[in-house]
Amino acid sequence: MQMAPGDPQISQLGSAGLTGKSSQTREAYLIQKRDLKLDKPLILNFNNFRDYAAKVRMAAYFLGISQAEVAKGLGLLAAEADKPPREQDPKAAKRLQFLRGLKIDDFQKRLADPPQRLRLAKAIQVYVRTFCEDNGIYAVPDTIGIIESDDSDRQMKIGAIRCLDHMVVEPFVFTYTRKPSASQTPLVVSAWKTWWKGAEETFPHLSKNRRQAVAGLFAAMVEEKSRAKQIEMLDDFHRDDMRFFVEKLLGQSTLDEKVVAAATLKLFISRPLRMDVPLDAQSELVQQVSENWLAHYRDRQPIYQPGIIARVTYIFSDTQYAHMVWRLVTFNFGRSALKTREMVSEKIWDAVIVSAPLMLLANVFIYVVAVPIGIVCAVNRGKLADRLISLVLFFLYSIPPFVAGMLFLLFFCYGGYLKLFPMLGLHSPGADAFGWIHFLADYAWHAFLPITCLALFSLAGMAMYSRTSMLDVIGQDYIRTARAKGVSRHMVVLKHAFRNALIPIVTLFSGFLPAMLGGSVLIEVIFGIPGMGRLSWSSIEQKDFPTLMALVYVQAIIVMLSILLTDLLYVVVDPRISFESEAK
Image (tube, rainbow, N blue to C red):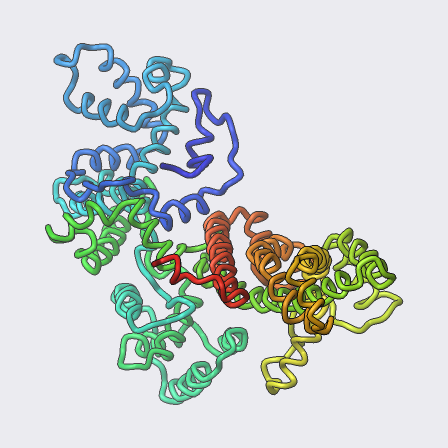
């Protein structure tokens, strides 16, 4: 299983070289692939029981040399490929076997054609990198073995390091997430401790006065809740002050202090640990980067080399299907494909708490206003009130919500007309400091026009449907019987007709809420509301597929919940309907 249109880098490689383009960036593709666990087997996973030593050595060989050297070696491989298997050189035979296993398009044909070998060499290195990414966590122990082995020469170690760079995502974690927790501390502390071992001598000790000044500024940063103001306060620090922050992070400090210390260190030390090397790297640099990878591996060895019980469990639990089911159950949709790499569930939750009140208020507004209007029209059928109200309802029904939104903005928000309502957002600047009454009044002021736009179209339809439903009930025999007994018209409508007319009206509830989710896209964009509709639109524009798929899932749940709620409302509206009687 893969994501359409597949790996952007591979999709650009054809038998003639670069033959196409992909609109998706390589970085975004890898984020999606790893977050959605598409590098795992589909149903059963036996990767923890496989030996990757031979394949990893081949991958390290091809990534440890230049493209020109790969192309030169292809000439020798082409000559060996023409020989019978028994006469082939053992090393050449293993390399040919490895390359054929990569399933490169038209490999044999391109291998035999000298003019195509340079482009084939480029394709080989791309496919080898993809091999490393796909096997990732399972091939890391064998790759680390190449780095640790005394038999590996400098070029082979360079190739192994480059393999690891493609196998592992974020080898070290230097900062906490948006919602820090104590469970993140060991990895963050370990990363900076590894860096500090090699960098400690380059940072001077702070004088007593400077340490006191830095301590005071640091305490103020910890107390400050605004991220923007914390960044402004960083101007008071210098790179030479980093020893203080390292001591705070590695020492006995509170979680808030560690979070601020780690963030400050990352801002001043943008690239703490180097994890990759160029092809012409000297032995000293190769040794330094190798030690960084070994430190990474030692901290996470239980992950890379699980016990036998865990391996057996992973056969069923570490698969695409198992991860997909678990993500759906726990609402863990991974990270966004954007550079911010925010958690998708957090983005959706921030949008839900904005859109949900608008949707609910719009639905309440529709039923509270439309149902009485429909009843009035039905009771006064054919009269002037019925005709005038129906005319207005047909007019409202013909106006799309986004057109109403633009008209409202023009006449009630800016221009030379009435400026009664704000143009954008749901709150005034500084609304967090308002009292509850002031806060709710400010919200109502901002939300009035969006809710009206969301409700107008559905309100007209609901009112006409209520009219039709009430007319059907009024024409029933039991209504005429009640009137013949002398029951007042008012009591007949409210007590006998209204409740029976509600059943078809309640049925529409299951369709209105999902329809509003679609209509909210344009309304939220027009009024600058950061809700689910606007998030859906921005996810489509920015090709943020993880967020988009999660939104589809959430909207499907909303549809099912609205249908369930409709079924429950049937029991409230009509006591004759009972789930217990069905069970019996």
